[in-house]
Amino acid sequence: MKDLPDFGVMLETMRQRKPLIQCITNFVAMNTAANVVLAAGASPAMLHAQEEAGEFAKLCGAVTINIGTLSPLWVQGMIAAITAANAHNIPWVFDPVAHFASTFRRDAAQKLLALKPAVIRGNASEILTLAGFSARGQGADSGDDAGSAHHAAQKLAREHKCTVAVTGAYDLVTDGQITLRIDGGSTLMPQVTALGCALTCLTGAFVAAHRTSALEASAAALAMYAVAGEQAALQAKGPASFQIHFIDALYALSPAQFQSQAKVQFYETV
Image 1 (cartoon, rainbow, N blue to C red):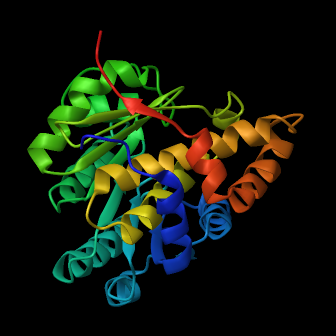
Image 2 (image 1 turned 180 degrees about the horizontal axis):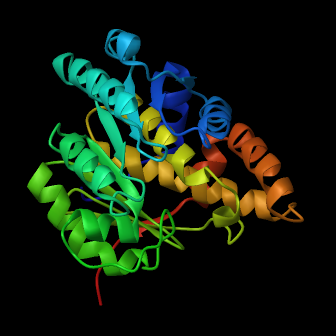
């Protein structure tokens, strides 16, 4: 990649295609994730039962997997959806929420990771530990910044031949060779539960619409979040009003505004 993509065109294309995204996410995130995907311009479907997850995945542009509220039955549904997606060349996005917090979660995350996600999206602590490094995460909260997880993200991307997105006060996205940095957002974003989980679903929407480059698609999703976060913060009085303004900002964001306000650059470590 010699030049940054035109994020405005990418947004316009995603909205025109309006991809159907199967969002297997946690109980806390379902409503927020569905509203985020709808506001951005795609179509969410929130279903996870093993009996239908695989059959439904064949209809989708992408599948997103979030292990936030994990159970054995949910793991079976996740595997069914991923297996069908892989069989039909449909990309899937993996969000390994707090995968290091218990043996059950660690085992499930490794089982899912072996099924070859197109994108892994997590906070710095999740990415560090998934790559085998130590981290300071506590539950779903990160104790590390994105920069500290850069090499871990590159390692994961190369080993699993995928794109890795690390989110935090600033975001990084890498395919193991090229790394992009995304700035923006708001300090209120971590105060609203499920916004990170919803970002995984939005990443799926961009990946579905831009199958040729998961790196660019992931950067577009993260950048859209960052721009909308900045816009929402201008009007919000606290976390509750921020969530309302954030969803409105996603909906109102024009391709021209997105292209002009996205803060994306090639990342160079110091």
